[in-house]
Image 1: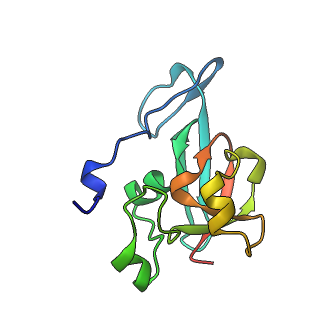
Image 2 (image 1 turned 180 degrees about the vertical axis):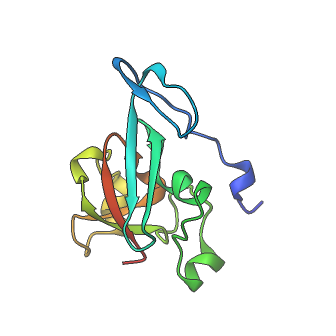
Image 3 (image 1 turned 90 degrees about the horizontal axis):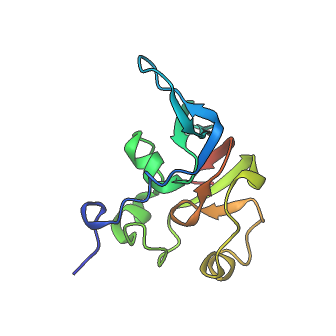
Length: 133
């Protein structure tokens, strides 16, 4: 069975509780006890507020950000970390993403350290990324 976005485990709601911080969405009151992270998609000019611990690929897709080249749209693995087609360049805030996984290290071994696979990157603070570098 080919994986699709519909059968992916949702990890976007993984939250790290931090008593002194809160997430605020436009038009909604703050939720005490939760920490937010901002994601700036440079090429698209989009700023997304996400829960600390959100998956970068899932947040991009949820917010209409296209991560894939034409080839990537045809052969991507649906976020399981197997194909390497969701590569992004981290322009700012590299320290606010989870460390590279072993798979990323192999797949991106000839790429700059600022390149990450969106499906493997967990956002833990403010970050700016360029899609399809």
